[in-house]
Length: 98
Image (cartoon, rainbow, N blue to C red; front, side, top):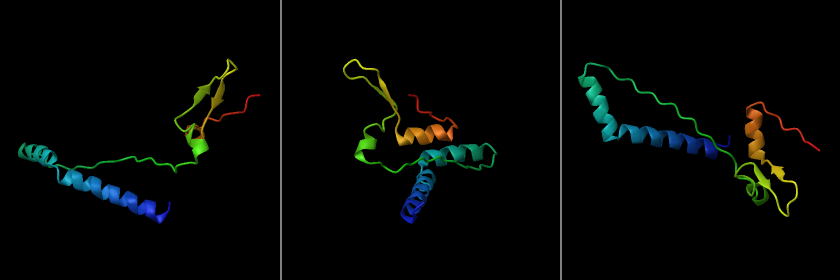
């Protein structure tokens, strides 16, 4: 991961922490829990996905798999490289069918 992206992720994490720490609503609920005789430990886990933007040709199919049927021909199934990476992460392999 390049250093700029790494720094941006760190800034995002800090911004998320600050927004929770500065939230009056969160502080109020935590105060209510404490006044009920409980200690509070708060931990959050965030999953953040990202992908590099691709060139214009690839972006035209980036919205997902599509069926294109112009002139009543057999539809063509198109899968972007992002779709392929996702399927591969699920251990699904697309074989070319002739």
